[in-house]
Length: 479
Image (cartoon, rainbow, N blue to C red; front, side, top):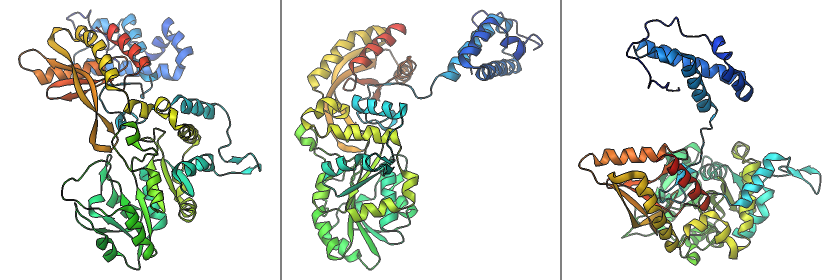
């Protein structure tokens, strides 16, 4: 609720609520009458009632003053409450935390082509499930089917609302009430308590874990295969890494083992990428194409991570396996809408022009941004932030490392540059840094940084030109 300004309060407290105006009286104030045409009467009444409720609570606590009952103060409180009620909960933030694919900040930024496609899909009727050539009902997956098959080498594809749903659906379809064999070292848990064993249980399949945490051999899988085995499954450990004395079975060897026993092989790639990241100077990551080339019958991956598109779970593979997944009644529950498909189609189209991809796809552009360019930005902002924080903090430019994020390449980082804001006073350093972090969050456009060792770090890898103008405006208004 709105906090009513009490700067002019006298020391005398209100001893009765008799002077508190009614809802009708406040509704008929000139300014409030004007707001009804802008916000609608229902929202205005709600704001008034909330303000009055707060005043009664303050009265009960002995904290209500006469000035708060004056009409100008009440109208100002209603105005503030209306702004809060009508403001969207989802708002733009400026990401200076150094994580490119930040789950809490919405992961991949969409390219302009995808944004335009989504706007078009929202504004007009589209052929979501209408085959224009035949005039009959169509299949919404067909909007991106040709692109996905061409890019991945798969025979067929289908789309659901995220990769967790994709894993659940493929397990429930291909191995319901049967056994799925997974290496113990791949039984991952990702954000939001998504655990492979739990998903398998909910999908109605029986998990058979084999090997040890750090080493799994082909004979471990072979010993586990029996008449009830439906799938051999490879789960990409995208959010952690085991190093040292390790052993995994190459995917092509796992596929061959499965084929010898008439058992399909499925791969959950997690983040998933359609490009050789090493070609762009980035850490290597297995591609979807490689999994298909090595014979996996089903591969699932995310749309809003390394792919750089909207949130979606993409499943590609053989005609037989994909059709079975599409025929599962649960598929309708997990399908995506027209806006997701419009964005995904536009993003996949960019991959058909690989020479231009690093310029047009925001995720790849941010991941490959030159360090010299990032450092130049940090040096530009250094005096601006120093003026903004004053003498309590020292602001120095510093080399640092960005994270790819969203579980992608957890042990790899990208050289970057930014600012380190360290408290210069005696004592209470942690408290001063927390207050600075909160001050940045309270800007009209909140700024998100990273706290480390009693200092605030601002990484400028993800700051765009448009955001830079907005940031400067915010800092100037709140100096």
